Amino acid sequence: MSLPNSHEALLRNRHLLQGRVALLGVIAGELLADLPIAGMAMSENAGVCAGLAVREKWQVCFGYDDPALVAGSFDTLVVFLPKARAELDLRLALARWLAFPGARLVLVGEKKEGIAGAVKQLKAVAPEATKTDSARHCQVWCADAIEPLPEFTLESWMTWTHIDCKSVGIDVAGLPGIFSLGELDEGTRRLLETLDDYPPGAGPILDFACGAGVLGAWLHRWCERQGHPPVTVDGVDVQSQAVICARATYRRNGVSGRILASDGLPAGEGTWPVILSNPPFHSGVRTDLSMTERFLREVVRHLAPGGEVRLVANSFLPYEPLMKRCIGPVERLQEDRRFTVYRAFRRS
Image (cartoon, rainbow, N blue to C red; front, side, top):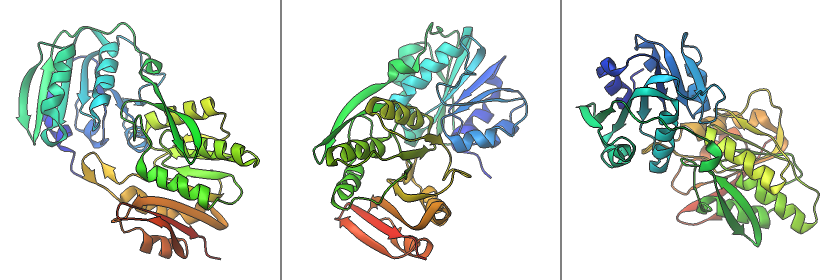
């Protein structure tokens, strides 16, 4: 399997890695096998972390709040460019907090993902940073003797947004890098509208790719307004920030349900009579349907007999035939040129 360009670029510059090394934002575990050192590898993706865990001598951390992250522990901090520009500031802050006095900071990223603009953010905290290489459509920047950050708390980066849909209002937590930060995504709004027009059956409910927990919090408030019994909505997401935010959103809104970190449907967690999703279809700047396609192929094993799967997607995405084949008959509850909300019931 070929490595991402940013990882290949780091391997070209492995001479920059000295002392105790931390890699922040790893997206392919194969990188570790090609490095002649050991250290700490952090990813906010649960699936990547599972792959990293098989590498001996490397400490693996999941996300920005992993308890194994310790201040002042590393001599070289490698920061891979995240897809969200706001997340780079968060990642750089974590790197500086992890840095031992006199540590080196290395930033690696692809040109098409915005490394040129990201350099301004790097120089805001490391003015002496210089470009050391340009290869594999990437740039590598290096700053020596960076100034360590005395304190890092993820809570200080969390924001709150109040959103309303169909006269139901909730407070939603946000962190840099999370989907639809600070607003209600239009696809999610369409899905919420169908939950009001076509209420799901009795719970519990699973929200796959739950993000910040919008669906669960909204359904909880909707049930209150309708005079219905409280509904339990479990959530699952692959991203650390999403898991953290969903748990905070649930606490703020009094929602009942578990929030699980998993790359795909959680194994061994039982079945649900209703499964909802506004699944992602991008990986970085690339279109990637693999996560949703895998979800649709596996979902029937987690769906109670006669149970419902409801999904919103961009109208051009080819999910309907797969839903028919893997779940059962499909109907369109709402559609326009941008979004379609599909519903399928598990065939007998």
